[in-house]
Image 1 (tube, each protein chain N blue to C red):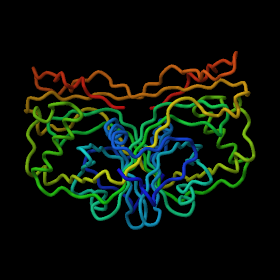
Image 2: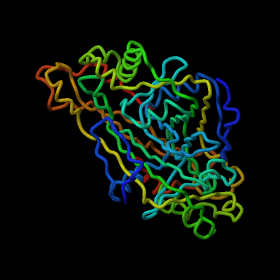
Image 3: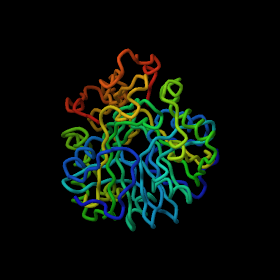
Image 4: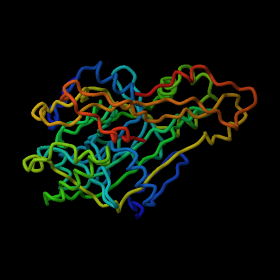
Length: 213
Length: 213
């Protein structure tokens, strides 16, 4: 994965910047929620949507009628994934920070045109949330595939930023205030059954494998 | 709060769109992490950062050397806040969804120039995470205020999207598959003390009031 040469960011904090595939993949896999930035009529838009990864490609989908997807097809986008891992209590407001992981991916998306490939990636999307769930669902219809746009980008121009651990404001080490980290993580609750379920249908045990973070 | 007239979005799902201040404020207050979209050299960028609200204004800050903030000062931005509230297991892949809350704010940011106002808002930022924490910290220095840019927008062009509850795919109600919701929420861990703390400094009880979500 190459560094985003002319798009390098100036950062205030002593973060770790990473461009290796393993770090970038692990962050993308941890958080399906992403924010896609695109330009429409000269103005920026940031739309939350769900992403998934297959090898060195990232995917997202939506209605074929979506303005976001239509715009994204024809121009550069920036797709960002972030996790809030903790509040870093420092000795000064200036050093207040959060522990976090984030990835930015730049590129021009490609639209999946082959229905078989589209279906394979939607299966991938569903089964990454709950293993085997695609096979349990009412099979996808051709008209649904048609109404769904799947976009994809290769993870060539991507970078990660990470921060972990306590404050590094040693300059203020003599100031008598407590410092520490308040950890934040995603808690997955017990699955709640839809009262509209048919009698006798049972929750797949795989539903308990759903994780975020 | 007015609807974003020419920026209305086409949505696939049966979400609730809301433009009332109470809904928008409650989502912004629940999630400090935001994604700011801006255009730089014609390309979109989406940068994760922290936001806070004061009345009908939203604020965010960063290094005065930050390209994002420099770009944002002179042009439109889109600031988006999103929360992942749960996975909605439907009867078909087409109806797979997540429960979520999100807000999009559009506008041209204003830079806070008055050091007193800047300081008041940074105090606001810190004390919204942990009540009274600003007063416990090493006081802010003039050079730190100078090195910090605080941007602000009025919440005039803002909208919220929300989804809650079970799948609404009644068309497939006869298909024998389990449906339900897997709730997701932010869990705040026990604060962890920095081993570099001075002997005798104690964690402020207010640290236990930190919440997200």
